[in-house]
Image (cartoon, rainbow, N blue to C red; front, side):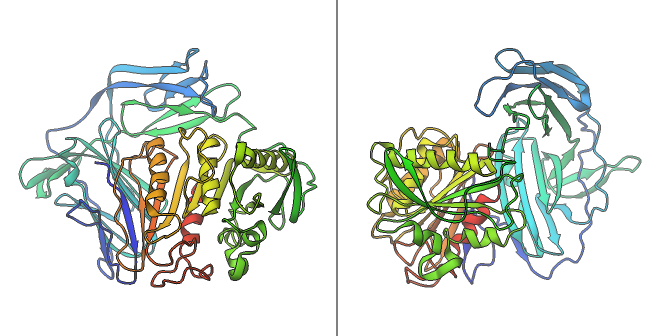
Length: 514
């Protein structure tokens, strides 16, 4: 169905809504201390045999095929070995599918008249996904930190898209997978082993679930295990090279780089930059790297120092968060633009980024799979140029009030993308920001949408649906503040919000998911 998940933040918000969904996904606080799980099953309809048709290709991180990789369907003891094109195919006429057992200590889920319902005793991340039998995503709802309370989710509305549905629900660290079959009428039957069928309310039925694993092994590559819920699908599998992915040449070395202002020769010019290395740096631990680009007329010192907001806004608020984090320490770099801008004439600023990466990766222990770029205004334009030209190098970008100011060489590859833009921006108009976003909505395979805008001086965060795995697109629109990277809900002030703005929370959450 290609829904988008919209999170509207304001003091009066009480529930999540989808612009084209009549039944909201919502909570009511203080209700339901404990809900007992039960499963509704169709009597006389048991899926105990299915055809297996699994196929796809196995490639490395560069997209090149891997030959002689062994792909094993674990529970059925079937396997295939890839050829020179990296292709595999596992097929069988029939396979017995054993029913899954009831969940131990089941206490949070209930199916009630087409609604999946559960209660949280304490706040936790939640996610509900609905797929058709071929594994195509029909709908996803996700909240990173759902408060305690009661939730319900309309499953039945997806039944028109596919008769047999796969529902995957994650609550905290637990994940449950069900398969449902819509029934006619307003009743369905529940059947458990050794118990007589009993008629109960509801319009969906649970049938046997597929819980199996594809295991992929190849010489020189890290073994990968992939959970599957359908025996009829095409899966592209990417393997990581053993001992090289995520570790730069500087790992294990005593570094020569230190915090502060530095210079580097790049493109025949002397270029300046600031660098911040985490306190307690471990030369055997790979660290993500974040590039922070300044705005027109700005400089590296303002990005590094946080301007009038100080340390709490250093590197758009991410440095303080990283320094205070246990699991997400980061290396930060703020280059200085020529003539206080990022014209990127002849690709000179992209060359600077390449040269800085080479320097830092050879001297420090860098996680080469987690390189990020972010910037405001002209710096947003430079970050967009990186998204276009270095999508295979950088993992994600965060663009604040950006426009296509530094070029877009290439621009056809996917990259994780988050954008922030005011609908009242007088400098870089909202239409331009949306155009940047839409390029990567397309590149990332997301379902095109027209996200809702803010109502009043607040902000709306839209998470696009249907994006390729690992390439999300998030769009943050706000009103108030005009041309600014640090808006504050309820305020029209365009500056001085670095200690109060919500944008650093969203950028931090986006980058640290990888």
